[in-house]
Image 1 (cartoon, rainbow, N blue to C red):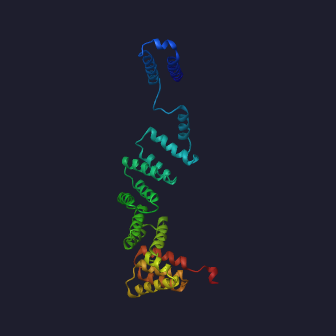
Image 2: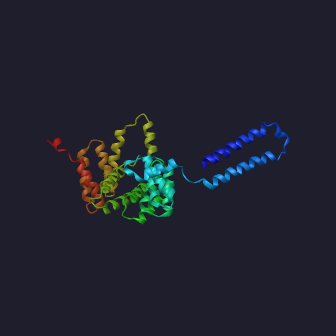
Length: 312
């Protein structure tokens, strides 16, 4: 069929050139040449429509697709795995699982916009907590780690569909932390850590991340920048002042869990290991009834214990 189509197209080309240069053509009616060309074009189109398949992939593609489908996905490269998923979706665009898998692979390839489109295609077909969580994280990756409104919406819906999934509440807590609501972030994270089983690897990871974030000293960036520009700026003096303020809050009974974490961390920064351990011991006594808080404090206690080799 394609051979005949090629012949017809060649005839059209020769006809155009011949009509243009053949002297006798000047003696023919003006409508004859266009009519001949139009007839040949119609014949070519009819030939193609009769035997061609405009939407069908070529034989080389079909062979490659068959080989990808038959292969073990683990033996394929990332690009081949993505193309395999596209093969599946070309046959069935309603495969929500394939769309979600494609989205994850695109996200790992840092092709966030394509990944978001794939996740949304999947969610349009079937709501799924894992896919919503992956969508939220992709929104974050696209925005340099910021928990945007789109990400919050995705995480919130994921948490509603599957309250036991740890990632959505963690990132919702991170969104609260980034917006300046440290108390809300603390409440979300401690509640999440308490709900997780001790055998869940996410429990330790989230506890470590919560400590790293909640223990960050709260400083006025503009004030620090202005002070740093002055000639008498002394970082050690500012750190000492920070320790004094935290100690005063602890002594007054007004300190929250995050204040204790900051005090432990800042004392470690100035080399006051004994002071850090004392603050840790006081925190363990005060928050002994809160399982989430104790998980973080127990990790800190284990981390701050001197090695056996150092104690000898």
